[in-house]
Length: 98
Image (tube, rainbow, N blue to C red; front, side, top):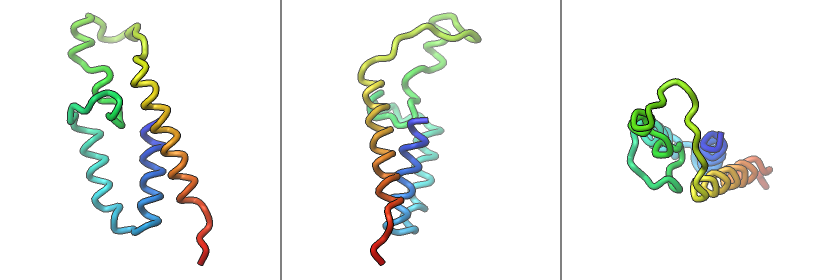
């Protein structure tokens, strides 16, 4: 949900500036979501590096939930992305002066 709020706010803010800027934003978000560019956990918008299949195989847990604790940097980055997305959403939804 954090990535959805951030991408929605970013797309609305960028679309308010110039709608043609949305065309490069869409493939960039798709690339970051589908492929894993190996960003650090605190920068990764979609959380691709938080829990991977090799870790599941290493732990031997394939179907049931994995018991884990959230690292603080991951939790703080999710909060920052949520607040940035909400701020961009509020910025994009304000009334124009014209």
